[in-house]
Length: 244
Image 1 (cartoon, rainbow, N blue to C red):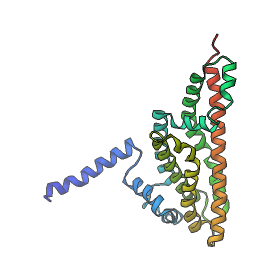
Image 2 (image 1 turned 90 degrees about the vertical axis):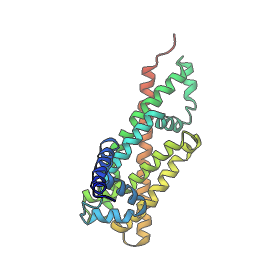
Image 3 (image 1 turned 60 degrees about the horizontal axis):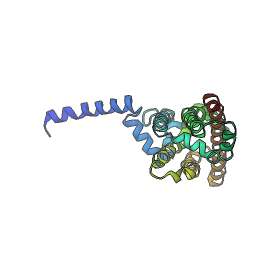
Image 4 (image 1 turned 90 degrees about the horizontal axis):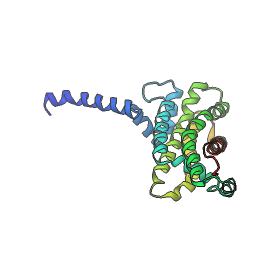
């Protein structure tokens, strides 16, 4: 390799990193963090507990990057709107009520789907805080900020799982029915090592606290879906008037 080519390599790397950072909300350190969240979750958690701010990008920032892409995909494919609609049993019983009210069921469904796609991610983001408090309560030593970074390790992994489910639903719609199970499975697998390294003594405590945290996260996710569905229905009914 010539000297000129050697000089160009770091510059190309910086340009590529700028593109990843500005366009995708990721840089190489963020991508390494995302990789290790799946391959070495305990190491990521340990780094933050030890006050290491250089090895990994703050997991909250990585999570926001994943959410950005989840939001974009939901707008393109209407994925989260469809998930929320299916959470209501494909509108079971709701369609009859709409027809009795002389509303166009397809128009109402489209309105619900659109609003749900816009609301679901922000509402779920607002419900993150109770989960952080739940993890913090498991051990007082780490402190709130460090516990927050550790909490976002399994949360980010679950968000990646959600994004992949959303993408796969384009060619395999049936996977949406298993989305919650898959996402919670990923959460438990990643949360276990995190809790073991910083929030529990021994495997019995690790298993118990992991399951407890998973139940908290599951409950928060269900609240997010129910809240999104309720707001989306009221908005759709206001947006689509009865047919005269």
